Amino acid sequence: TIERLRQRASQHFLDSIAVKQEAEKTLPDAVAQGVLAMVQCLQSGCKVMACGNGGSAADAQHFAAELIGRFERERQELAAIALTTDSSILTAVGNDYSYDEVFSKQVRGLGKKGDVLLAISTSGNSKNVVKAIEAAKKIGIKIIALTGNGGGKIATLLDKDDIHLCAPSTRTARIQETHLVLLHGLCDGVDHVLLD
Amino acid sequence: TIERLRQRASQHFLDSIAVKQEAEKTLPDAVAQGVLAMVQCLQSGCKVMACGNGGSAADAQHFAAELIGRFERERQELAAIALTTDSSILTAVGNDYSYDEVFSKQVRGLGKKGDVLLAISTSGNSKNVVKAIEAAKKIGIKIIALTGNGGGKIATLLDKDDIHLCAPSTRTARIQETHLVLLHGLCDGVDHVLLD
Ligand SMILES: O=P(O)(O)OC[C@@H](O)[C@H]1O[C@H](O)[C@@H](O)[C@@H](O)[C@@H]1O
Ligand SMILES: O=P(O)(O)OC[C@@H](O)[C@H]1O[C@H](O)[C@@H](O)[C@@H](O)[C@@H]1O
View 1 (cartoon, each protein chain N blue to C red):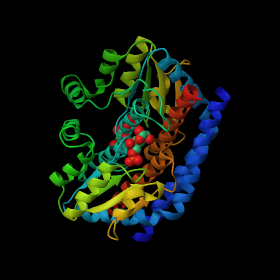
View 2: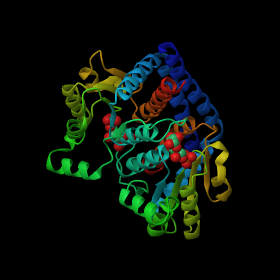
View 3: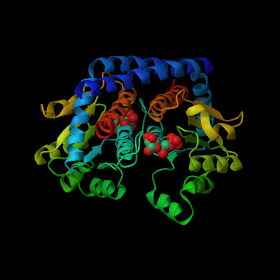
């Protein structure tokens, strides 16, 4: 067993590396576009709202922590909020309306034209993320979508003002690992523009 | 600017790949040990408690979500709890005692001999994680530590029954990216032992 477990762990690293090698070829340009969109949003006094489910909820919160707290260098607090953390809102909306509305209702309640919605879904198909994007578009909020799996339903909702970072894999774990590098790339780029 | 941002995004992928190539050489054995420790814990009716700060809090929650919900395949719910989510506990303990005690008090309140503490810190030095480990050791709880940066203070607290997964980097972002692959490796290994 031990030898098989060791091999599986090793294979995860090798697979993760392969997806990142592929991502490095195609995604840096969209990361740069995402950085510029975020900087423009933040510098005009608007905010970034982030949402996703499961591992992508974790990513949304991780990202908000790096903007409100810090990434690698000290700087001014930046306006970011994860829509995944208020369990009173999540349980109330899930219970009274539908779990599909947990993010969209927050987007309608908190969102303003000029904000950015960071929408994270490895399948590209999570209904509550789809509905958050639809709600954001009605307000004039730009979307930065982190997806995988070809982009799923989310890919069909984006237009040319939006930014699509689609991880080149169909496996949730590998897509999440790529998303984390993309999120770090966005944080680094924002700091670079603001501080260097 | 755009060209520089593109290059930085590309460099993040290349750096992330390099750390994972290094990790693949040294860490699969400890992942296998971690899987066996978790399976033994779960099969004897005990639980995994996970803690960390910032991106590592996100990882703790991501991991609990994959054990309570699912990783890649359907299976029985597995007993995991993130100690990072109850903002009433975090604010009360932070306010009345010290932020350093937010995890250790939960470990003393919820932990039982036979449980596993998944302690995550990229520096290896976060005081509340250190105190959680100290509290766990008094109860006879095995530690699986995810660190970086050589392991920091946490490395000095572990003994040979514990499992140390130290990401070979000193840069927080790179360490977190490696931790995510390690956590997916743990989930995959647990599913492999339980289901195959
Ligand atoms: O397709 P997504 O929007 O990324 O949603 C997937 C999530 O609901 C979670 O599903 C399972 O619980 C696991 O695969 C998690 O890692 C994932 O985040
Ligand atoms: O050394 P650690 O235990 O990993 O703690 C670091 C965290 O407090 C967070 O610090 C900053 O906010 C950022 O580097 C985060 O990514 C990090 O998780």
